[in-house]
Image (cartoon, rainbow, N blue to C red; front, side):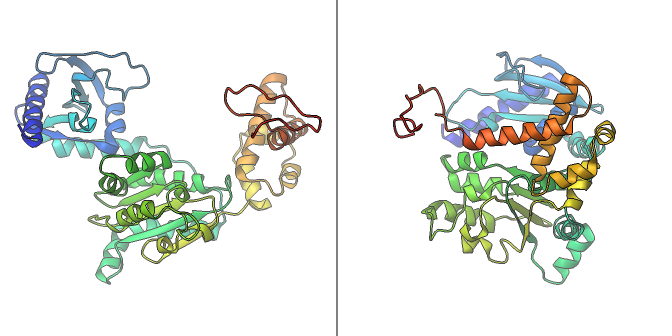
Length: 392
């Protein structure tokens, strides 16, 4: 048998077995992909039954998403719609996703999808907008969620505009890039936009796959209107004049240009490195259209962040003094001061800003000054001038 006929036979067997278990008369197989976790989280889990007479259980206690079986069928129901998840992992050479999919009655297929989107929008956490300059926030919103608005996107297409938009968020760590992306992600859920979150680890795993071009392309693909987030993109793309990564860059840029969607797509990339180090080929219009730089927060922004702290904390400290003392601090550093305040409160009661500030200073000083070996290597004996022997 060829690989195709072998897979077709396996697929037919799995679908028929799952349909019998779930009592489906006209089954449709589908792969939830990015919706997998949400679908199983909100569904009511039913019986675990054999697949073609065989069932293998495994001890998996991590979360509801874990299949609990590498070979078998799990029954589910969501808002009265019955479906089954079927797993038939038997060949380590094949992609596991080919043998891990769901089956539902054909008449319920679209209903299940729409039900899941409705539940997702209702259940999604909607935090406040990120703390950032009002003008910068308005620009970011206009070029992401505003761009994806159905009426705006329709008009853009009518006038011959591009069906995609690219943003690069830059700046030192801890100044709001991740918070901005988290808010956009929540808005995607609320508005029903598709999204993809690409981490450096996911990108590197795709690059090491047997078909890296296709694997990377899938990371940067949405099937309808949505946003693709790529965190720390400098891991994948640097100026080829200074860093020898031309093959990696070629795969990356090919995937970026090859995205095909029905309505529109926005890429949101983040980086901590200097824009000068990023390949000019990546920064051209059509790939990156707008750069937003996230600077350390001003006194006004630090005050706005502290105003979101719990009322007990705000009542227990001098907010004006706290804002003044945190001059030059990043949002992440200000939030760490809040965490130290809370830990001190739990241990000793009261809200001791001076203790938290001094503890923060000591912690950062220790991190900057200590030079210790990493891992399980034994400590080298110190020399007379205080340095350590060896190459570390």
